[in-house]
Length: 286
Image 1 (cartoon, rainbow, N blue to C red):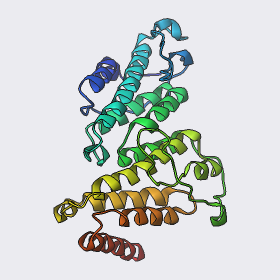
Image 2 (cartoon, rainbow, N blue to C red; image 1 turned 90 degrees about the horizontal axis):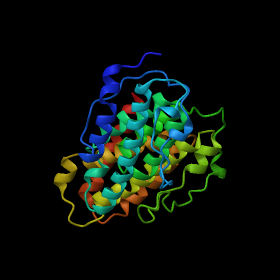
Image 3 (tube, rainbow, N blue to C red; image 1 turned 120 degrees about the horizontal axis):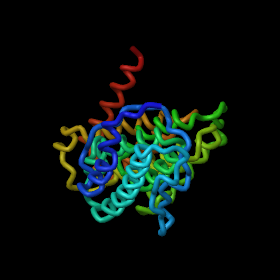
Image 4 (cartoon, rainbow, N blue to C red; image 1 turned 90 degrees about the vertical axis):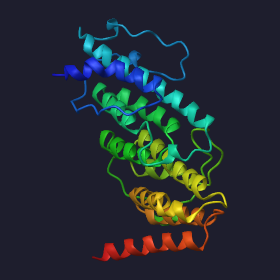
C-alpha cells in the first residue's frame, strides 16, 4: 500500500498545530484505503488517564510513517477534547454553531486520517466528535460520512405509531436539556451504527441550541436575518431532519415549533422564514 509521503511529513505537526493554534484550518488529507495491521492498543481512549506512549512495537509492520499517522490521530483527539472545554468556556458566542467555524477543515482532515487508519480509529473519532463539536453543519457532514463508513443494515423504518418524540437530555452533558427529540433509537432501529446515531443525536441537539442562541433574546435585529444566518440554519436543519429515515418531516416540524417559541420570533422573522419555506415547496414542484 502506498501512502503520500508529504501527508506523513506534515501529519503530526498539523495535529499539534490543530491543538496549539485553537483549530486554525489546514488542508484536507487525500483519501487512501485503510491501513492494515495496527494494534488497537494504539487508539486514543479519552477515559483512560494513563495513556501509553506509542512506539513502533505497537505495529505488526516496520513502517514509522504509520506510527506518525497514529500520533497525529492521538494528538488530534486530545485537541478535540480541548475544544469541548473551550466551547463550554464561551457559552454566548454563536460562531461555534456556524457553517464554517475555525476548526471545521481540521476536523474533516482528522476524520480522513482516522478512516485511513481503520474502523477502530474512525469509531474513536466519532465518539469524541459526538461530545466535542457544536456546529450542527459540521456534525451533519460527519453523520453522512459515518453512514458511508459504517453502512446501515437493510431495514424498514419504524411506522409513525412507533415513533415517540422523546426529549433528549443531551448525550454529551455539555449543555442543559435542549428539548430536542431523541433520535438515537430511531436510527438504531433503522439499522444505523451506534456511532452514526450518536453523531446525529448531537447534531439534532446542536440545531436546537443554535436556534436558541440566535433567536433566544429580544434584541435580535432584522440585519441578522439579512445576513441569512437564521435562514441558513433553518435550511440546514430541514436537510438534516429530512435525512432521518421515514419521518424526517415530523422532526423538522418539531424543530420549527421550537424556533417559534423563541423570544425574537417576531413578525418580520416569521415572515422571512415562511417565505423561505414557501419557496422550497415551489422549487420541489418544479
